[in-house]
Image 1 (cartoon, rainbow, N blue to C red):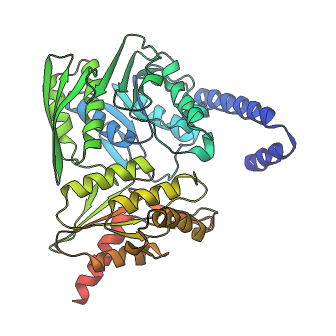
Image 2 (cartoon, rainbow, N blue to C red):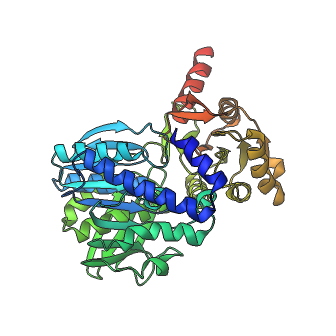
Length: 434
């Protein structure tokens, strides 16, 4: 009913009037839901992480660190939802949780008497006022790169939506000094203290040494030019060192001890769908499932894979329908530049024609003359099976775009799907036949 009313209003009213009506409705909706659940966010200490990439991994690091420090926590991320140590997969398959879902989470967190709530915050949630009235103890910005322009239209509008988190004057602010949009977010003041992190020489939590392994990373991080932490994580890649440092920085501001920060980082063994290794037995090649669905995320993932892989990097990927179309050829170009073999396939088409999505990606690949190392296989299961069939000793197969998700939407219909489970199933079938 609501969707029909919205569509009808958009047809007959000027765009500015529609926007005002939507804002009014959303603000009233949040207030009503909050009241229904007894204003559950009041009194909670909320640590909120926003940014284009790295949000999920960063809040999992924060959650792990705070638990290592003896705190009771609640976490709501794209991949996992956890309250007082009880964890479940997030199978909502939505960028933004429904207002009711969010406030049910706050209610349950309050009942559990947690010390900290750690939230992954999207630009959509901020723009749609879902965090109105939620007290933000600490706000962290990971980075800003191209995504969601189907919704925000321009990078400036996208940046402004993220900035709503910092305009609320949170007690603590943590910013990525290495990010291209750092100065934009540095204009906002914290209620008590702001701190920056990164490899930049002026970062207050400065990454001074890094070492990458096939199944992990190390980094030395110096805080305020005096306190040095030697951090080691199970998660590979420089991008995860950045995520780890963001988490360590907010923990440092909140008074967590150095030893607890080190232990908490080391305790996080994996995040579903984030450089997730799939057991291939003794096949000799590796398979990694990753949620990378933006140009920046795909580029960083491929760079990491190339740096730790002995032989070829074989990429299986596509793009989501009804989303930012401009990034598709860009991701095609990135794949062409950094992958050794490419299989373009379907992801989630929603209501869009899948062939057009693939064609936009292929356009980017062919633009840089890399069509010869690409094949197009629409069926995602067949595409994964093909990658497994051509992999040889020392190769790494990357299956990207869906990560942790438990189902996908094709032509408006929901069907069960998980990349890691499909990989295991195909390998198991091949093994049983031999």
